Image (cartoon, rainbow, N blue to C red; front, top):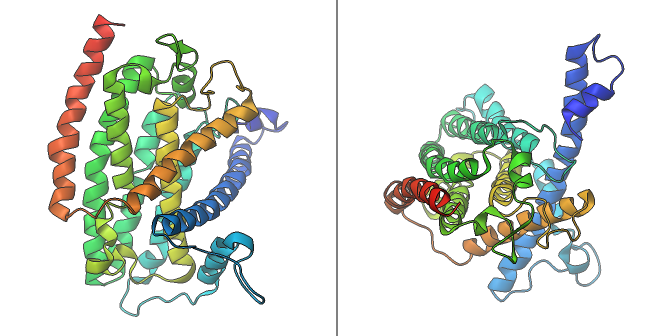
Length: 358
C-alpha cells in the first residue's frame, strides 16, 4: 500500500487533489504511528530483559498479589508509558516556552517521516520514491534541529552542552554513514529502496543469498561503517556522550518531563528502527528470504524485514551493556580519523572490484 495507490483509489482525486493527497497521507500515517508505538513497547521490554540477563538479574516480573507488571513483566513498558503520560508537564520559568514546547515534536517528526521510505515488504511502503536513499539521509537530519532547540530553549547549561555535543556527533557521523551507502548505489544503479532490495534477489557465489553484504569484502566494510555510524547517530552506548549521566545529567532533555520527555524517548527507539531498517534494505536483502525462493511471499517479506531489523536492534542493546562509553575526543577521532578515511578508500575498493571481478 502506498500513498499513490490510495490517491488512485479515491474517485474524487482529480477534482480535489490537495484534499485527496492530505487524506491519503493521514491514512498511511496512522498505522505507521501505531507501529512505532507498539514496536517501542516491545523494544523497551526487550531491553529491560536483555540487560537484566546480561547483569545476572531477573528483570521485570509479576509476582504475588496486587498490582504488578503482569506475567513475565510484560506490562512493565505499558506502566512506564502511562507514568510518563500522567506525570506533570513542567516548563522551567526561565525557558523559552514556545521553542521548549516545539522541540520534542520536531525531533519526533524527523524520525517519523523517515518511515515513509522504508520498504516493509513487496507491497507495504508508504511512498516508493525513486530517491528513497537520498530522502532518508536528508530528513533524518531534521532531528538535530529539535535537539538544538531543546538544549537552547531550556536555559540550562547542561542541556546546552548536551545539545551541542549531540549536534556535533550526529552531523559528523552522517558523513561516513552517507559515504557507506554510495557503494550500494554504485552496485545497484538506483536510489530507490525497493529497487535496491529487488537487486538482491537470487544466489551469489553458488550458495549464499545475493545480499550486498556478501557481494565483496568492501561491502561488508561498508555495512560495518554504516551500522557503527548509525549507532552513534542514535546516541546509543558507547556513543551516548550527549546524555552522559555522570557529566550532563540527561543532556538536552534534562528539563523535560511527562509526555514531552516521552516523545524524545520514542524518537530514540524510532531512530534505532530506521537505522536498522536502512541497513537491512541496503545490505541484508530487505524483505528477501535468507533462502532464495523459499517463504518469499509478501507476508513472509514483512516477517523477514522486521525480523532482520529487530536482530540489529538487539545488537545495539548488546553494545550498551558490553562497551564502555567513549570520551568526547575519542568519539570525534573515531569518526574523522578512522571511519571517514576508510569510507573513502572503500568506495574506490568497490569500484575496482566491480571493474575487475564484476
